[in-house]
Image (cartoon, rainbow, N blue to C red):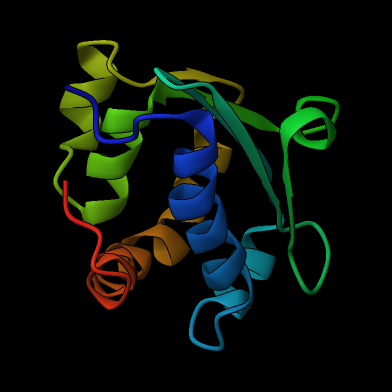
Amino acid sequence: MTVFATSEEAAEVLGRFIEQVAVDTELKDKWVSSGVAFRMNYSDPELIIVLDATQDPPQVRQGKDAADSDVAIDLFMTADNGHEFWRGELNVPMALARRKIKVQGPVGSLLKLLPAMQPAFGKYNDYLRDRNFSA
């Protein structure tokens, strides 16, 4: 059984979370200092989210707007793996090696995002707890 039953549920959880951390006072400057726009292409269920940190404040887009956005990096993974990723439970180097996460674009740019991504993991767990979301 998957974590998210529908694309709408995935958008409600993952999409809203990304919107929050994009402008979070602790993380916003880290996103902006990376200067990177990246797209998360989730499957099972389908969801596309872009976090564009080339501008201040960072912009988040979903759906067709996200699909049509110009980005430096595309990440491809299942929504379940995305859930594990944001919980901090997915070993990213191992997931990349096993192709659970596929990356298109410069890996160096992806590494610039890590200072913002790592503190977001704890925030995702708090976000889930605040919404009584369990999976």
